[in-house]
Length: 115
Image 1 (cartoon, one colour):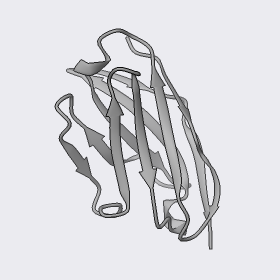
Image 2: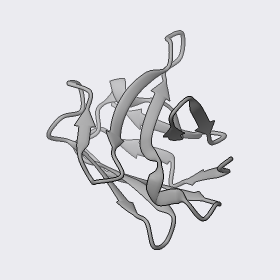
Image 3: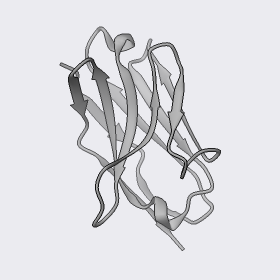
């Protein structure tokens, strides 16, 4: 089991940037696929980006070219650099660590983008 704690959310104007970070417990962090998901008001949780243990990345079409996911296995952290933010990026962002059928979630961090 992995415990995840997100940080870095907040309020930003459209066009601005934020970096989300997620710190994880556990000594096999490098074996997990890591990801960021988000849930906007009135909508279902959706994938934002994932990064495999080997460093391969995958992004939702809505964030390609604006967001960058990265991981530091030595520090047990995963980050999401968000640039050119839009009001539609407003959501609670969740860190995820997945290995096989085991899914682990953080508590979420609010990102609000004002127009």
